[in-house]
Image (cartoon, rainbow, N blue to C red; front, side, top):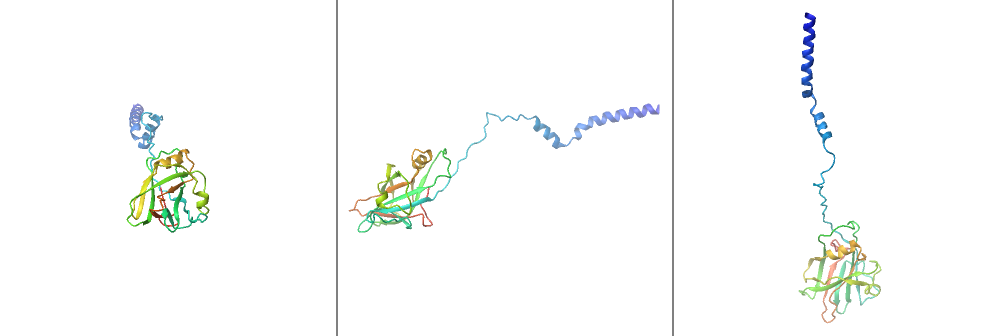
Amino acid sequence: WPARQLIFSLMVLALFAGMLAPALLPTTALAQDAATDADPTPDSASPASTDASQTVTLNARQDAYISSAFPNTNFGSAPNLNLGWQTGGQEAMRMLVQFDLSSIPRNAVINSARWEMFQTQVVPVNDRSMDFRAQFMNQSWSESGVTWNNANFLGGQSLPLGSVPGTIGWQSGDARGVVQAWLSGSQANFGVIITGDEVPSAGRWRAFRSRETSDPPRL
């Protein structure tokens, strides 16, 4: 009888331990089991967000201005970019500017883009807004070698007319179309050449800071 009683007690103890075992498993193991049972296939109805919009600022890669009164002189290292007509001086003056867009993916969608330039001089003083025409440059050029004689005729397709007010400080305008054209490859990125008011009798001209200063042209 004592032996039977001992065997019975051991059987009850073993049964009781078996009932407690699941409750004593570590919680991390249970969590791993739950993760293992999960469906690894992503829910096609709930795609991950692909919004990668960002804003970048690009300073001019090279810039210069050219003068009809000094047709063989290069002004690529000057701290200013002149535009318009300077009576008794440089006469017709045009600006050339190029930006490096290699940091932007070629398939990027441009939601907005603006050009910005710091205007330092307005002649005559308190002049009205000056219209200007920008054209895609149709071949490469060098900031240190460009002159009136080798570049004034290199403008290709024209962009919509722009306008710059007669105030000192940062000026800006829309550049979305030109940036998208460069990125898409519909226009080669040789920069632009910009022509202002070149009517001699008006004597209107503007000066902007070049990339050789702390306030370079930028996109």
